[in-house]
Length: 341
Ligand code: SF4
Ligand code: SF4
Image 1 (cartoon, protein in one colour):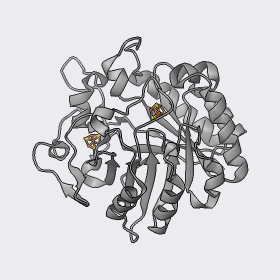
Image 2 (tube, helix red, strand yellow; image 1 turned 90 degrees about the vertical axis):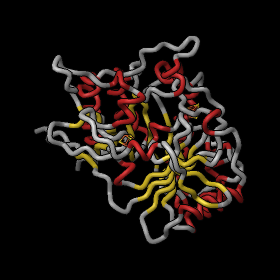
Image 3 (cartoon, helix red, strand yellow; image 1 turned 60 degrees about the vertical axis):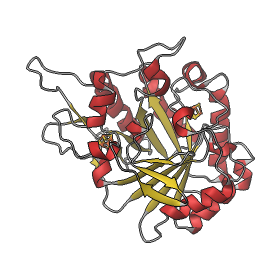
């Protein structure tokens, strides 16, 4: 007899949990077609080690569960990444590195598996034919080779798959691949209308976004398949059911998105605009005054997230009477499917 499909649960924002997303640099060896890094808004520098350590101290709260996610660009291009990880652990952060899989500077030799909570890889397809047109020639092979090495060495690994119209119909092949590779956690993300997809640069098609019915038809089912194979799956809620509570993470959670130019956002949808509510300046984390992202967090509209309505209005569909068909959740609200027994 088949066991019932695992059931997703919405993970409410946990009071007291803090997540610090620190972009150590914006440089990267790849040029993914959906890259959201925007050097004109995020800076181009590589943060020196001393600066990283002083910034980490601004966010360290050893008494509170604090997750540090080290990002880029490609964070393993930072020459001092191993020292940064050790210092962060000493400050009691749980540390994750989000890599594109290239693992520069002999990363697997310089960091021990027990120094890192998770080493995360990114793939946007179950094979090179789907992944490489999005992330670059040869990327699938390099990423999966390094992922296998990491698993063999004993690292806890996770994988991020950014769903778009280009790859949603290949998502169903991921669970078997991940089980085969020994990946413990699977993060399914949805592409945002930012960066290249938003501007539709030369050679870029505009149809990246997945329509709601397609998302709802595919993603929960694939998540259940992965959970049945023993993988912990997380994916964005996106559409709130009738009666579900809308909450803005900017008001009820502690998330900090930190860029090398010192901008600190509370909402990732705002990252392409100079509306950050905090900034690191003169060695301090300072609140910025004026019309910034935090002014929007308190607004209540029938469509759910205000920033989504302002920045990605085409993600919302309306009934004939003008009411929205779905409310859009906070982009940080997740559904979780733990591994089936
Ligand atoms: S690996 Fe990440 S930072 Fe690098 S190009 Fe791709 S999306 Fe951008
Ligand atoms: S995505 Fe929307 S709901 Fe979430 S923090 Fe930003 S403004 Fe708030």
